[in-house]
Length: 364
Figure 1 (cartoon, rainbow, N blue to C red):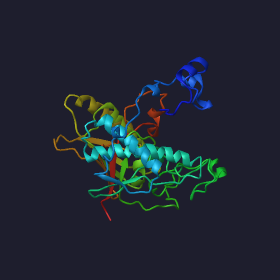
Figure 2: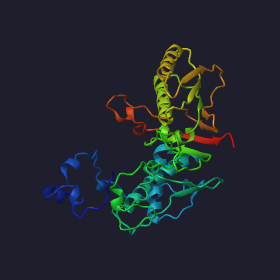
Figure 3: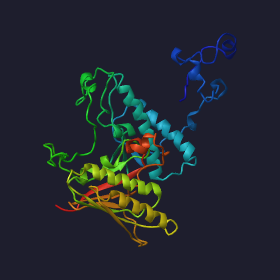
Figure 4: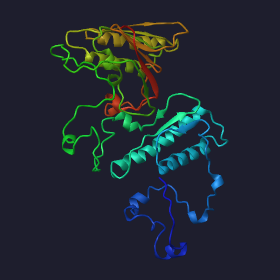
């Protein structure tokens, strides 16, 4: 957080009668808050910033802003982009991919400012934040991680009088609501009867990009809809080796077990690779998983593929779907394992690694 502004009194006057924080709003002049400021750079000792010191146009040879944004929005993300370029690529030599990453992050940061203002003041206009590669390719619409994690709440304007299409009234918002998801929902299966519910959404082929450092993702959210109704699953993942990777596998099996109707069975077969140095422990852990899930709705078996060319990772069902995963089941970042840590019992509380997932229909 950086505060910038002009002072109206001399340094000597403020030393004699007041303090340097006097120009701040009254709400900010709080000792507990001010004690958390890391540094105070006296602006009166800094030479005026000259225009030639700013980076300009570094992204424009490669990208254009293809959505309508306000001048203040554009100034905001361009200055953030300029600062990031100076820090990360001071020589200005960056690939289009590296430039795109910084531009997208800068636009994301400004979009968060805009989105939160929209929740307060309905005189502000909602804008899309979209850029397009000049070399060709699809336009990229920038969203914040929280918009992707909670899509049902992203359009709500709780403190604004503006009516947003699809938004709920304050009374409706106060009532418990079912968990929202941006993904298609397959036919829910009644645990008691095994009969599909009346609400069925046709699943489609798609490609999903999961953003780095996001929360709110789980195996259920990513896979459950496409596994409903199958009786056999094959997992191909060469890296179910380390302890946390085998634990991920056990969590996947638990998820499949939970969505399988009572009285039905879904067999899960793992094909994985091995490291000679840790193979003994890997075999022991996988054996324990196999034994523990024997007699459940998801009997599990496994095999090791020693081929040096085994790299592709996928989940294939016997009812016509293949899910390709560039990271396999190893989607989650490291977290401190403790029985009292929410991340240990809820995947949604963990940060994820950025990854891409494709859902492909293998049968008509």
